[in-house]
Every structure is written in structure tokens, then in C-alpha cells.
Amino acid sequence: MVRRGVVVAGLVGVLSGLVAVPASADEPAFVVADGVTQPIHSFADAVRETVWVDIGLDLDGNGVGDRVATDIIRPATTARVPVIIDASPYYATSGRGNESERKSYDSAGLPVKFPLFYDNYFVPRGYAVALVDFSGSSRSTGCMDTGGRSEVASGKAVIDWLNGRASAYSAVSGGSVVTADWSTGAAAMIGKSWDGSITQGVAATGVDGLRTIVPISAISSWYDWFRSDGVAFRDFGTPTSLASGFENTGAKSRCAAVRSEMTAGAPANGDYTAMWQQRDFVRSAANVRAAVFSVNGRADLNVKPVNWGQWLDALPASVPRKLWLSQTGHVDPFDYRRATWVATLHRWFDRWLLGVPNGIENEPRVSVERAVDQWSDTADWPPAGTRTQTLYPVAGSVAGVGKLRTTPATATSSFTDNGSGTPASYIASPTTTSARRVVYSTGPLTAELRVAGISRITVAATPSTSTAHLSAYLVDYGTATVRGSSGEGIRTLTTESCWGEDRPGDDACYRDTVATTATVDAQIIARGWADLANYASLSTPRTLVPGTRYTMTFRLSTTDWVVPAGHRLALVVAGSDSSMTSTPAQLPQVTIGLAETSVQIPLLGTLPAAPSAAQSAGPPVTRIQPDIVPGRLAG
Image 1 (cartoon, rainbow, N blue to C red):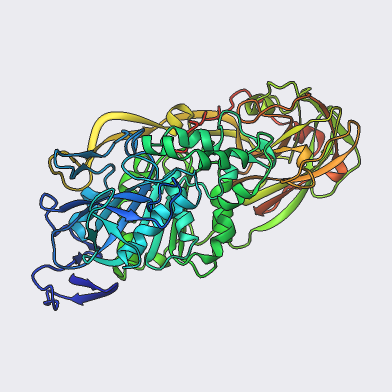
Image 2: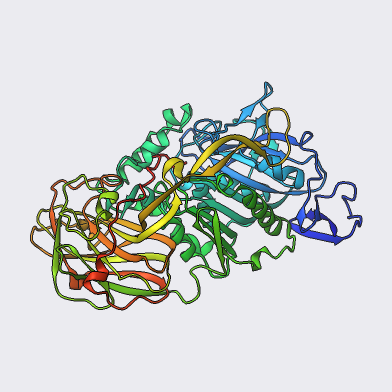
């Protein structure tokens, strides 16, 4: 069946057969065949232009409204079309995608190269693509404020302009007014990492016209990129230092006040401040009306997985959603599931921007990579039947090694933070005593156990000094073949595949990838970090008194993980994580009160009966999946 459609004033008409469509019979906005829009528009003849959209702020204080450069490519048709938006700080610096593509322009200033495949693939199918430079970056004016109101406005103002609620101009200053009379007003936002974060920030404003967002490895709370429950991440810097790498010359010279505000709001001790609160999009997620397609990597230590879990949890139940979760690190799905990704994104945009009744919203919402390149779909997330179960560490016959049970037992156990411990060292040799950590595990599972959601740990800790940092890990002990840490789980090949159409200066071909693999005996499935001084408040630390017990609850990362039958689920508690977090000023010995310590885990399945000492020991662990060392940019 072939359908021809026209989009008028944001409404979609889809007519069966080759029926003429009023007002654009010769140039339909789109044609549907086999359930998807077809490439009917000439990519070579597409309209290319740049407009500068006034975002309604003047953060650089020059008395003129800040404007964001918006490079647009759209079909050369009289029919109105929807718009796919990717707003980013990277287009003139580190670039986008696995091949670090940057924008380029011809001698007249018209955009030539649009990074990524979106324009090559979607413009011929009846979509416009708009790539927006964040305020203060590349060709935009204003200031970079790292997840703040100016960056959110960089995306929201473009949607307002598409719907006649904001002004755009033909030049960065002055210029003539430009209207978007070619647009239906329907918009999608897509982007990875920093770009993806702003899709969520814009959606949380509830802006009219935003029909869907596709956040990929996206930050939902900027505090949770730089900090974790009171502790600062090592080498991630501050919002000020991150922005400084992408500011243009105008922002560098005029935005000292913005930089000072960010610096003051990001104290080195990891406390939560009003500056962080402004950059927490989860707080406003109740305003979201756009459909959400969230894509993430389970091994991502750049944008930690707590970000996607808390975002999905906060969305209104009425919001249509979809979730992909790979074994990769900080990787775009185009580089680990390319053909399926392009096909799924195509149907997603067809449904939410053009109203094509393809039923994608009724299909399973969740797709998880359970083994390398093997995906499992489930109806919803968290899965039906998931319930939070509380497990307690119980001492065994070996010091610092014990069982994980559903009932507590009175005992204590201690470890010493020497400032150099890593997750790999903490989870190694789980049957023997280590001075640096304690470990508690179930017996071998008799049936698979699914962990799906955000776990939390409550620790009763007595430090020997006035400063103490904690880390905690849920671990799957058992042999498995997984994506390796090299290349964040992928290896780039020399071959290419093409997705869309070419034109001079903008080809549609990209280098292929394959998975890197490793066979391991232990995998971290969730982790968290905290500063014990923030036991009572994230915004106001307390001075710890050596020898005094403090109880603190903190989050572990979001996961959707199946622990197979025969494997063990374990909890490991240690001091600072030298690979990720800062170390305390005075390294402590920490004594854990086991009866008052517990972990709350969202589980689907039945735990085994309490293990015997022999069962608890398990086989030796010699092969540990090394962590993917994250890049310190939010890209």
C-alpha cells in the first residue's frame, strides 16, 4: 500500500492510494509505502540556510538579545515539513559521531556538511534537519552555562520560532526577520551526551510543538555528571572548566559573570547547591509531554547510568516511551546496532512527527543487550512483577567475607581506605579477606534473577578519621562473554555502509564497527559513591567525629541485568574509588555495622535459600571485566 500525505498547520493527513492531496498534489510532504516514509525529495536540491534565533536572554550583557546559529536543510517543496533538531556545543570543536564530523560552509556562508546521517536519510523522506550551536559556542552569541537556562533556551527558542513564538534573523547581528513558514511546527530533538541532555531540559519546559525527544547517553541532572552523593568525580572538573573548552571568542571575553556563578555553585567538596538544582531536569520531568526514546550504555562511566533511570522514573505515566540498553560504554547506537537503529528511529519519527499509524508505540518498550549482539525485548520497564527487596550483609567465617540474606544479623566488619583502591581490585578474590573492602554474596542462584531499576544502599559506618568516602558495588560473579572495555565495546573497521543520499560535501557513508569481547568471571552491574560527611544532607556536610557511627543512604546506578542461574549476586563495600572519585583528606579505617547496613534492590525473581559457608565461597575469580575509562568530556 502506498500513501501520500500532507502536513498542514501541524495536522497530518494520510490518504490511501495515489490520491491527490489538496494544496500540494504535485509535491506531497511525504509518501508512505510498506509502513514507512519513502525518499521522494531530491537531496541534491534541498534548501540550505542559516538563521540566528533570539533566545530571549542577554547573558553576555552587551544589551542585545543572544542568538543561536541554526543551520537548516529541508526539502525543496511547497508542502510544510516537521523538523529534527540536534543542539550541540561540539560542531566546531570535537565534532559529532564516531568519525568526529564537524559542520562546514561554502564561500557564501551556506552550510555544506551536516554531521551525522540525519540529513542524508530524513530530508529525502520529508523532514527538515536543524543543527543548533549552543549559545556562546561556534557561530552563536551569548554564554555557555553548562546545562543552564541559556543552553535550554538554545533548543526551546528554535521550537518557539518554528511555531511563530520567537524571532529569527538572517545574520548574527542585525539582519532581516526570517519566518519558518515552511514548517509544520512539529519538532523532534535528538542528541548524544551533552546534546542529549538538552533534549531533556527542553522537554522538561513542556514547550508546545516538541513531539518527541531521543536522548542518547544523556545527562538528566548535571550534579550527577560532576558529583555523586557528596563526593566529586576525579578529573571531571567543574561546569566552568567544561564550558571553557567550547566557548567562542565572544563568550570568553564577555561571560566572566556566568563563569563566576558556575564556579561558586560547584564547591569542590561535592555539596548540592542552587546552581546544581537549576541544572536538574528530573525535578521538572512532570512537565514533559513529548514521547521519549531513551538510549543508553550499561558500561557508561562518562554519563553514569543513574541519569537515565531517574529520568524515566520521573516521567508522567501518560508519556509514550521506549528504552534501549546496550552493553557498551558511551557509544551511539548507530555504532553498535546500526541497521536496527536506523529502521527503528525512522518509524519513531514517522509516528510522532508525521502521525503515520505504524503502531510502534504498542510494541515492546524495552530492548536490552543481554549477550554480545543478542537483544531481548520486554513489554515495559521496570518489568511487571519487579519489587524492591532488602538484603543484609551477614558475617561469615572469613573476615570481611559473608553472605547476603533477607534477615539481618549482628556483627561488624572493617576495611581501610589507602586511597588507591579500584573497582577491579575491590571485586577480585571474593572468597578471601582484603584489608580494603568487604564482600557479601548469595549462594548460587537456582533460577535467573533480574535486577531492574535503581538500587540504594544504607551503610552504618564508623570512620577512624574526620573524613571518609564510600563506594559500593553490586556484582554478578560467574563466567560470561561480554563486550570488552577496548573502544568502549566497539572496534571501528575500514569498511563503510551508507544510510541515505549524498551531495557534494556531505556523504552518507560511515565506517562500520564490530563488538570487542572478553570472557570474565565477575561483572559490576551497579555502583555508587558517597561522602559520609553528607550523611544528613547533600547541601550541608557535617564534620565527622572519629569513632562515631553514622548512617547514610546513597544510590547505586540504574541497571537492567539478568544474573543467570548458577551465578552469585554480591554486594561489595569499600572506601574511595581512585579511578572515579576524589580521596578524603584523611584516609580512614571504616567499621561497618552489619545489622544496620542493607541494600534495597529492585528484583524480579526469587533469591535462593541462605547459602552454606561452602556455597558462599564459590569458584576463584581471575578474570574481571576492566572498567571503560571515561572521556572527561560530556560528548
